Length: 279
Image 1 (tube, rainbow, N blue to C red):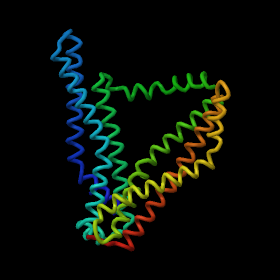
Image 2 (cartoon, rainbow, N blue to C red; image 1 turned 120 degrees about the vertical axis):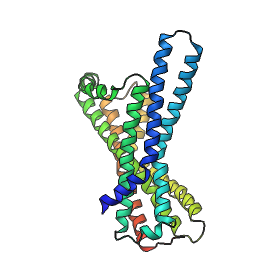
Image 3 (cartoon, one colour; image 1 turned 30 degrees about the horizontal axis):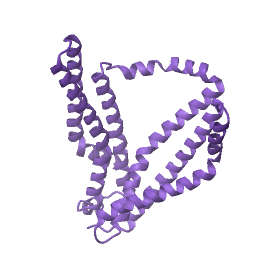
Image 4 (spheres, rainbow, N blue to C red; image 1 turned 90 degrees about the vertical axis):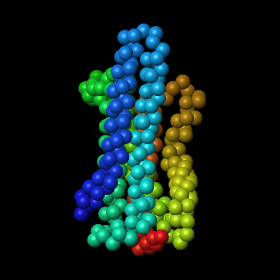
């Protein structure tokens, strides 16, 4: 049943994404064409103007495409589970957790597709359609250079930092969307102005999250603050030590992301399952 729910989520928005992807691909091709024409026809003001307009339009489309995932996911969650459609969705023979998980998985699917589309279209627009493959092929050379620059110890710390960064960015969509889902769940508890209360709860939860994280970081990551003080009294901090502090900070961020995400998910699922209060 989870697979069917995910399929339903994908089919609900694929036309909107498809149209935007097609527009971005068209503009990237036109941008490449006029850029080549400008290089062939020297000092042509019209070609330069067209290229500039297409460049601005392409950047605007990239921003729109990158924003679409969160916007569409937020709208669908509110429409499906909080508004009138919620009467139907919550009567389906599936547990509440499956409704939330299916929407979260759909967010990850669209995020991956958007990243791939933006990468390909950016490569076309700048005349390097295979830049992703070239970047992957250059990884061994980058590793060799990193070892020479930082040494084995610094390189191992740098590699750990990159891994932590990857994990953090993988968790980021889940934390963002579960924060929104939890805010809708809290807004659902009110009898009036549910949407307004959901927005208010979003900011209240965000402020509380930042306060808790900041206070905890002051105690757990005190070494990072000491490293900053050391940098003011010495010429430089050893690379391995610096990466160690960065890894500590990233690890704490990952732990907090997991804790908050799990907390938001459990709270939202319990509220919608036990305290459903639709309009």
